[in-house]
Image (cartoon, rainbow, N blue to C red; front, top):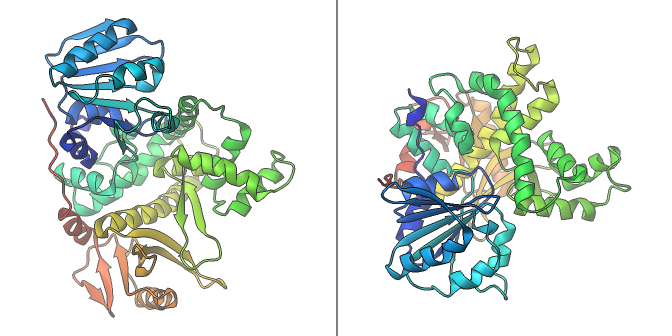
Length: 431
């Protein structure tokens, strides 16, 4: 299977194409915004603003020019007057006085502004912004589970392979490096030094876009969460033990975590009927795997000799990320909220809890790689009853003929694909 043919069709492109007005496309770096806009959106002029404020103009006919910043307003004005579609990528690099100029052209044509800085969204929609009310905001996060799975199925992968690989390719930057014909865990091991280096560099890039210094505190929090500190109290204690803060104060750690969450680096997964409100983890599956394994094994460079503990470490780290991926996929399919439950008195946990809008438990789900045993079914039924879930289910990577065992739904890869097909998007690259 050719690496060059791995193209993920994203549902956000359809929303952008169908909206008739001006749009702000935003999200942290390396989530595939530029690739999507260039390949799945019908545009007449594509403008890219470099860090040095040089302007690269791409026209629909294939013409490419580098122009001065002063020429941008006239090009944008003339194009919008003729009802053209213009994309300005990395627009946050424009001097803010350009915003007044751009706003004067509204509502002619279709203007799509794209930026990698999440803080720019607050500026655009602040009370004093000339662009306030002129742009529909569309956030580009990691690739949606449905988009990843459907795209890989279209490439010819079977159901299990598509689901396993989708966990990783939600971070688009890894796609050119992978070989889909290889087992996923062996590919993670092969690419581990690249994944670790890129993840660390990406964190630095995100902080630069947000105009914040990557302080020891932020970095320590990310590493603490990636290596297993999921409670706010644990993170604060870890920072204190490392000598980064003078006291293990929760409010101090909380403020940092809130900023990291807004930047798209950390997610707070709701905990249902648990003493703690949220479960902290890194948003990126592959970043979480990279940092966790890098810290556990000390691997930072390519090596032909695989440490004996590495295979098991990758298997364990990947398994946890698969669990959260399946939860997000089921929540997307059923249009429900995803949560996680840790039962009191060491009674175990529930991998996935799907909640309705009133925060009532609809389904409790266990994730297994092997076929579920009778004890697995009994456990999920008992745990589901304890939290008041209406239904219980087991997701297994192994295909089974049974759709239900002892009243518990069995969701196999093929079943999940069938469920996703109802939400399938028809998105074709533009010429």
